[in-house]
Length: 495
Image 1 (tube, rainbow, N blue to C red):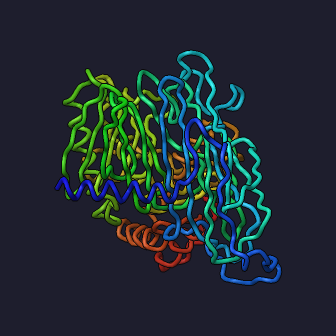
Image 2: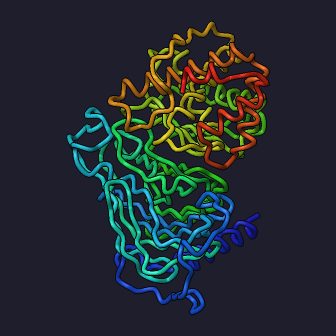
Image 3: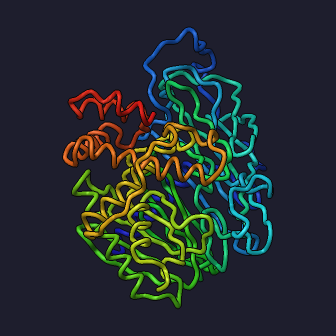
């Protein structure tokens, strides 16, 4: 076993060295890469001269993020190197790239999405800066526009050719209790790195900041990540830790691999306890702050296994060998979903927190493993797609799995569901339209078609869009096909 572990660690290190040949930490951005494009790629067809099949970009089965992460807890800084390896699957010649850099949402108090109560020390900024960006061996210009990053390339990339984006970057973690922030030795690192935006028939899905909702749209990819943290801390992440090596300087390096995940989330914790349970072939790991109610945490972990099994049996199998729950100091959300990992607010461990409400939140966040992780969507343009289904799925679990008399929201259509995030004026309108209105749609559709047909619809929806990006139009086409009846009058009420 020791020999196999050593060989695995050696292989991971070798891959990281090859893919991340960029100077790091003290020498960020100081040296030039020696790579260059082959001569036969210097003269390219223009976009007008090339006609090919348009596929969504970056293709999930052809994209890998390789990252080297160093956390400095004294300065709240992440030093990062990223290499994004993919292929031009757009069907056109590419001369630009768009990425999302979410930490820049926290630059100033006027635009931060975090609520005031999350800033336990007063306003504290977060940001992401880049030292150097190299595409296919050539340094390129880039422009930061809020949470968007625009790369303008001095050369074109032909369809079906490789794209390798190398970046040196640093990010400051704000001192806030939020999905990207830190408090009391807990570092919640959601959406902390630069990631490629989606390009499809509609063009680039560009990110913008929002005071509410999830301003993201990204494809699944594979991840190979090396994380260096102080050895007094523990690490929880998307994917699985293959190896960890203790250095002689008081730090530990974790080697992590994740396949076909929608995002990559890190959580660095101090003085936490781990609870492990195996339920229906899934290992559920629960991370709880020291001094918390362990009986409550064990109950939640066990229930989570039952929830995952309920959804798996009804619509399709949970895709990963592990599922992780972490209780964190977080304001603005009771829960937050990532691939194979969810954050829950510490308040849910309190004996005063309503148990039925806690189980609903847990079921909602777990449902996002199907409706967000497996079946993706543009959460800026069509936020109802994942949130409405997560809400309805949670009610279904409570009704069937817990035998609760579920009191659902009224089904009155107050506004159309297919609204973009920036078309809503407030968080209350967002929750009323997307969560309550969206759940009401699914409840009404269930009454219209029956439970069995709804399950057929969702199984087909999952099959058609697994590891892909779904759209409202695509979902409605599935509903029309499986309903075997005229659905226009019903659907026109909601869209």
